Length: 301
Image (cartoon, rainbow, N blue to C red):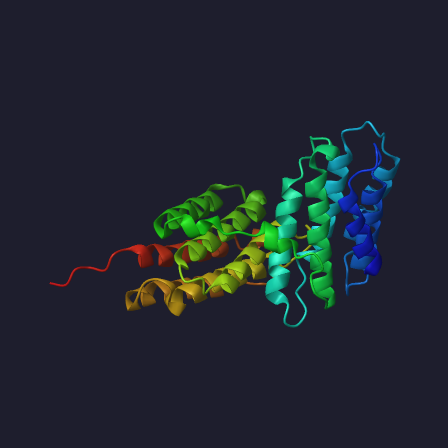
């Protein structure tokens, strides 16, 4: 762990000429640190090490450096996104994983790495924060503090709900081979709904939990069988926020009960492909509950 921290700290000095020895070392130390975690995915660790070797031997003039680094960091994200923070650090872990995912997505594999070196270094800092939090330590860089923000606070709840409805509709229309990405986007949209409605900032942890489940569905290794469970957890967290008085009143009981039944029907241990209808119904019922909550109460007669 100390070697990983040192390797990532050294990236602040910037690239040395046309060589990326510091990044190569950081990739290797990241693989070594992840390997120390219980039940670490050996395939993903192998991918990280392979990208380090390929980067080390790559033509200095090649434009493929960023692509290699993105693959290596993406493999690390596949492992880390399915973990949990140590006792007392679960919220910090969720935020660190989100910062890591944002940083990896921001790396443009078509651009020379020198032009985006600062973001690459930031991605390594976020990865290191996540590893430390999973292993029982504190985040040494605090990268989540600079990357995480919720722009949804400035969006109306009505707009956020309409966006969530649109994403759930897309989920129903897509080929089921695309269910992973579509389900992730739908969960993210529901997190946006909760964040937009949370004007008192009392539900940060619920929002963070929903976003974590969306990221797990999106990024986890293709061999993982946890996606149905993650969807179920994310939808349940959204309903917890709604029933906790986020918006609406007792009129919502019929809607939330229906949504709870639909979510409960998702079988956690089955793959998404075998329960397409159940997952779609659960998403629709949950969004319907939020739609009902945004409707004005009927006037008294």
